[in-house]
Image (tube, rainbow, N blue to C red; front, side, top):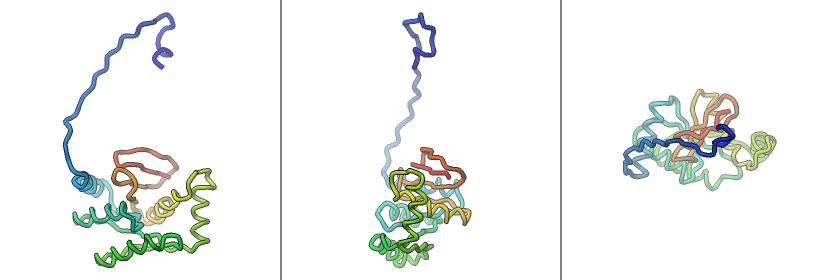
Length: 173
């Protein structure tokens, strides 16, 4: 829109672009995840993880555990995710971790997902899961991480806005 910001009789526009390049640091995905886990621990108190039992959230949990960093896994147990949450419960049992468990029956789950997504004209009811868990974590003055994002996502509370950040996607509501 440069033409909108200059005089109408001006056909030529002189300008310069300056780029400040940074030195690229070659690293592994795990090293990057370790660095980010440490940064998150330094920046936020009372971290929780929406732990589904899937590979993404388990990677986040393993990263924190292997580094000895504090994190509290939260498992949302419903009739719809029994197979995946089975892996979450098994992992926690093997590692002697006591997760926080939220149990919803079929009717409760569908109503919560409807209220948090479809009723707001959102396209996917699945997005209601981290919103529901974020409310649970907020009641405990915590910050919620998920396995979604690059490689972690922080879900916090206070208004409804979606903001991309260095942590992946942050949903503040």
